[in-house]
Image (spheres, rainbow, N blue to C red):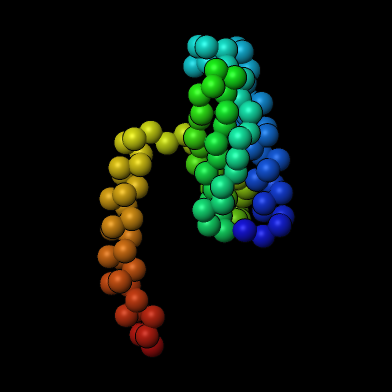
Length: 108
């Protein structure tokens, strides 16, 4: 992860923590405050962020970077078990697609 993208991530994570800490936020039933516990880069354009809540619980967010276009910048979501299971299947399919596509790099 280059320095500029890392800095943008750090700033954005703080904004997200502030958003989720709003006492009037829909879904914030326990009026929890979110603090950034740690940012764990997982690739050049992805990171896992641990949010520590004032209740002692931990929230886990997946952050991903869009490098260009109108959507350029950091985005995020809080994956559910269904998302994670879906991405496991996606990973297997992605492997097969890359394996199949490789030969097309040599077509003239």
